[in-house]
Amino acid sequence: MRIALHGERRDGPPGMPRIAYLVVVDPDESEQRLALLHRNVQQSGTVYNNLAAATAIEGRIGRGTLPKRAGLDRRPGRNPCDNQRGAIMNLPDEVDVLVIGGGPGGTPAALALAQAGRRVALVEAGQGLGGTCLFEGCIPSKIYREVAARRGEISDAAQFGLRAAASGSPAAVDWNAVQARRQRILAQRAQGALAKAHALPGLRVVFGRARLTGPRSATVDAGGQSHAVRFGRAILATGSVPVRPPIPGVDLPGVLDSQGLIEIPAIPGSLTLIGAGPVGVEMAQIFARLGSRVTLLQGAARILEPVDPVLAGLLERRIEGDGITVRTGVRVESIDAQAQGGELRVRYTRDGRAEQAQSEIVAVVAGRQPNVEGLGLQGTSVRVGRHGVQVDATLQTGEPGIYATGDLVGQPMFAHWATAQALAVARHLLGHDAPYPRPEHNSAVIFSFPEIGMAGLTEEAARGAGLDVAVAEYDYQVDARAQIGADAFGRLRVVYERTNRRIVGIHALVDGAADLMGEAALAVRHGLRVDDLAAAIHPHPTLTEAFGLAALAAP
Image 1 (spheres, helix red, strand yellow):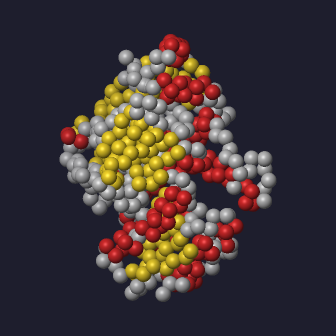
Image 2 (cartoon, helix red, strand yellow):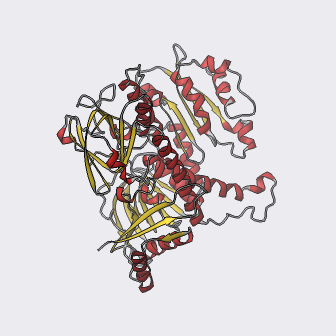
């Protein structure tokens, strides 16, 4: 038996719509988790509009017979960001372009095509326009990171001569307030995207599910209704879902994926993360700085395997210095519940020895996989390979006229990369020159402490591609701006070809690396030489002047 608890958040900013939600409860959720969820909902200003369901939940809390699995149900019928559920009735029978997926791989293409006068239908199965990045990934995790960073600043205030009463002591975290702020930001951004879409007369947005029924037809289901639509072209942009590895015990209560970790109703006293990629590293440091005891397990020989190994090694030492237990080269064998204390135990082997980690919560963050479920690809010539939907150089699938973008086609899985692909496909469909994004020009940031910024190829990848490269380095320990900020730790690495001195990669580990990647991306994209970087006059004191100093020292 499942119980649905409906409600509306009424405490948003003036002029913002109410945020509806649906909590679905299965009969085997832990008392602690649901009680925290219930309290979080009540304290954030929520009112119930389904009294029967609310009473049922409260009755179970009172009797101590709570169910064991609670979470946000994002079924289209409960979409909180769109009050025009009747939009499916206004969906035309035929459109020029059908876009399936309202995240960064779909929405930008739909907007660009509609602005150019095309008739476009955009179908999104989630809770609003924005995709995983907005609701489960980039944005909410950075909201949490900001909280962790501000908390650290309060503790470190004495370094700057500030004698606040709480200086040197960690600030208390009001997790309900953090969650309320997260919801406000997400609602604001989702509503902004929806407003842009509604301003275009040629664009119809439907929150529901679209399934291909042939090479030029689809069925859209929303609000208990179905509508058949024909299209001239289609863009598939349904993103990705967390990988759920076949580990015994992975379905136990208290074992979460990345989405569950974002929606966690309270800061856990202890946390074990399985996977030390970008998500694992970011969340490990965030929760450690919020007060959790954290263990980070990685199957590979080092954390952040695709990242420059010098920078990844430096960051790993910083992570361990911050009190996080890091174990690399492990094989996770099982997860089981401890009889006493209610903690979970992760059993793993490392160097042939059996070891274990115990914690209140286990998060499996071992990557993501393309989300092809329910797309109806079997009625088309679209093919799915080991890494995702197979596409050609123009992102067209095996079915002429059907394109795929973003996480659906595999790595790299970044929101900005998906947007670049979406806009390239839109230009292509409009008959314009469409320079498609190339992986060797991509830039990205890992929001660790300190951040890692990367543009282009690592030294390792460049040599693997057959390039003869050298590296110019700069140590931020001697940097004036880094010293002023009290974290003079980090390294800048500029990778360039020896023969023509063309820059093929720039990689930085420093607090503030994210804001350096604009210049780095331009240098890599346009093939600047290290001498061009050296000739540019960089302002002082800034982190970016390291680019010029490193280039001046390039052999």
